Amino acid sequence: MGRTNPTYRDALRAIEDRWTDFRRALRRRDRSRFDRLFAYAREHADAAGLLNHRNPLLPALLGIDLEQEARLDAHEERLDELEAALDATGDRRRSRDDAAEDGPR
Image 1: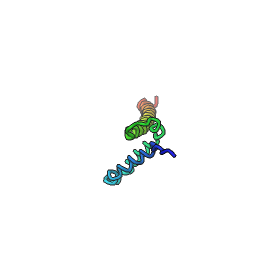
Image 2: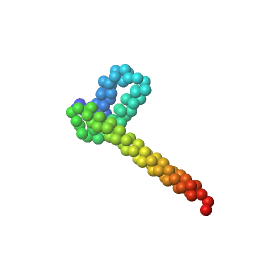
Image 3: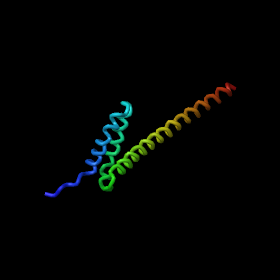
Image 4: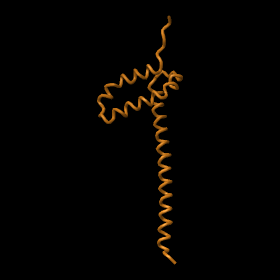
C-alpha cells in the first residue's frame, strides 16, 4: 500500500502542538483567545487544504484574518444599527422638546 500524505488538518494540529509552550506561557485571559484563533483557522481548513501551500501556517493566518474580518463586519453593522436607533430616539426627543418650548397657544 502507498503512503498517505498528511491532510491540512493534520498539519494545522502539528502547528498548534508546536505552539503549546507559547499558549501555556500566556495569561489565563488570553488562552481562550489563542484557542479561538486556531478554531478560526480550522473553519477554513477545507479551503487551505485545496491550496496545498508549502507553509501551512500562511493559509491558517489567512483563515484567522477572514474570521476576524467577518467579526469586524458584524460589529460595524451592529454599531450602525445602534447609531440609527440612537439618532431616531434623539430626533423624537428633539421633536418633543421643540413642542414643549412652543407651549400651549
